Amino acid sequence: MELFWLAGGILIGILCTAAWHWWRERLRRQHADRLRDEAIAERESIVLQARREAESLIRDADLRAKDELLQRRTEFNREVDQIRHELREHERRLEKRELEINQRERLVTRKQRRVNNFRKQTRARHELLEKQQAELELLLQQQRERLQEISGLTREQAERMLLDHVERDLTDRLAVRIQRYEENFQAAAEQKARRILASAIQRLAAPHTADTTVSTVDLPMDEMKGRIIGRDGRNIRTFEKVTGVDVIVDDTPGVVVVSAFDNVRREIARLSLVKLIADGRIHPSRIEEIVKETQDEMERHILEVGQWAAQEANVGPLHEKIYQLLGRLKFRTSYSQNVLQHSVEVAHLCGLMADEMRLDGRIARRCGLLHDIGKAADQEMEGGHPKVGAELARRYGENDPHVLHAIAGHHDDVTLDHVYTVLVAAADAISAARPGARRETLEKYVKRMEELEAIALGFPGVDQAYAIQAGREIRVITDAHRLSDAAAIKLCHDIARAIEEKMTFPGEIKVTVVRELRATEIAR
Image (spheres, rainbow, N blue to C red):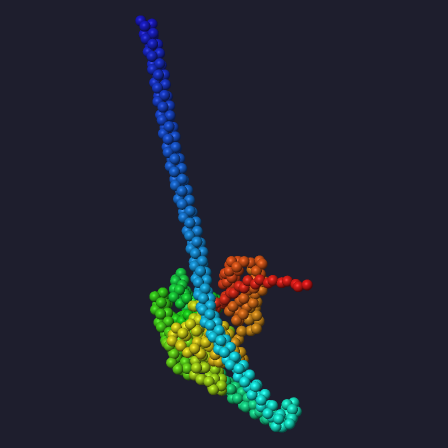
């Protein structure tokens, strides 16, 4: 019985041990399956995330490529537009030059027809004179033969006797008369010269102003600089944007500097800043209000100054636009000489000289007052101030040919075939050359001319360069063997751009490129 129970216990133990091993193996397999499933899931998750990151990188790279392509296309379109604009500008200038050449050709044709008609008339008159001369010679020959028969003298003997008698009679008379005339002429010339100089000195004894390109505004206290600048600089930016000037606020105590080439704009900015400082309310809306008010006041002041100048020169009524242009000359200087005061001086000098020459003094004064009217708008219109002034005067009702010719030709830009133009040129030189009129030193003038010529000589193919008209024009001589016509046109454009980049100047500078071809041969 005990063996039975022992065998049953051993069997049960064996069965339990087998069951335990079977259960452990099953748990191990389930754990391995679970780990494999988790690994597979993690692998799929990593692959999915990698795919998403790859797709995101591809999209970002695509967007960056598109942005870069768009930016390059925009820059290319901008460069193309700029080149097209320059080509249109060049084409417009060529069309204008072609129109001028056609006008000159028509003028030359008309003059050629007049010359041909004059030659025909001259030829007919010459034939008539030759015929009359032949008849006169025949008549004189007959008279000489008749006189020889009456006097019994030959022609040579009669001529010698007559000439000896006339020479003895006239020698003393001519000597006395010439001496008397010389003394009278010298005395009259000295008297007239003294009278003209005295009148000119009296007329020119007037105060002069020499404006520069900057104006200063005094501040009651240095804290005002911060109010002028404003929070984050909004006040000073608004002021510069509305007035078109540069406001310089530095460490100089109690002073703010206003800088601009346009003297009218600079004066408006200075007066506006003075009003804002006195008012104390400095903010963008108040700045715009004060500047607008000052601009209206300046327009009225310019009109009044122009009317005063016309009244001072006694030139009669003018168009309102011409009054405004004259008023703007008060704020324009040439070599530190006030242009309006210079114009009034030239008007008085022209009137004095015209009265001495028995000409119309009012026309001469009108020519002198308006001769520099183009300087009020030469920065806004193309061309030198004589051409611009003549065009403006003609546009605003000035139809006197003497006045228009004096405005266009007082710098020898056209043929001087009017006496009033000569008077204006002389008076202009007198007013500009008198002591104290212009303050620019010779060194500064020569330096500016040398700088202008050096810029042109720095380009290949340029043989010579000459700055003329006080630096308002430069003539460039090139070698035809090194440059073609197209290259000369491009060179002219490049020189103009270089002058704009390297120099600071008011108005404009005309660049003329001449392609010179020289042919030399020696005959032996």
